[in-house]
Length: 164
Image (tube, rainbow, N blue to C red):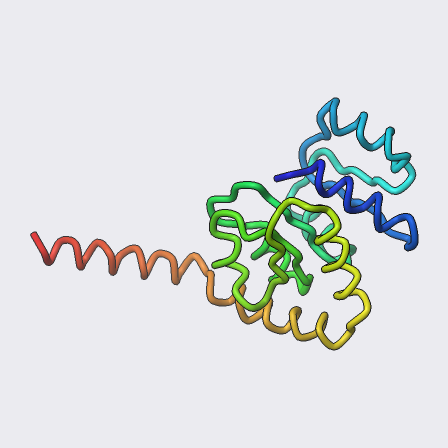
């Protein structure tokens, strides 16, 4: 998920803004904890190790943006969860993230924290763009339902069986 990039990005943002990192589910590794301490970020980090569905929804509602610079992602459920929660997303283009995000997410290529800082600052400074992304995110999330997934999967099977 590229947690070190998230930590570095938040540390840079905190140099001139009141920004917090909310980590939900799981725990930071020892190396990540050391990085947080080395960057003097401890006061700006909040962590919820165990997250049931209710806690996760609360976290999405409490956040201003989902920063998701994953290095590899098969699909990108956190992006869809953020969209469904009315949360704008800044993400990498790894794996299926660019496809899942479509025009509803800010996609940052590369692994440079500076590019993520710039994307987050631009989004923070542009309320109209934020609202546009929120609206597009809600619409995008409605395209990815379990019902549609089942229907499309069944159609693939039907086409395959028709060729036999």
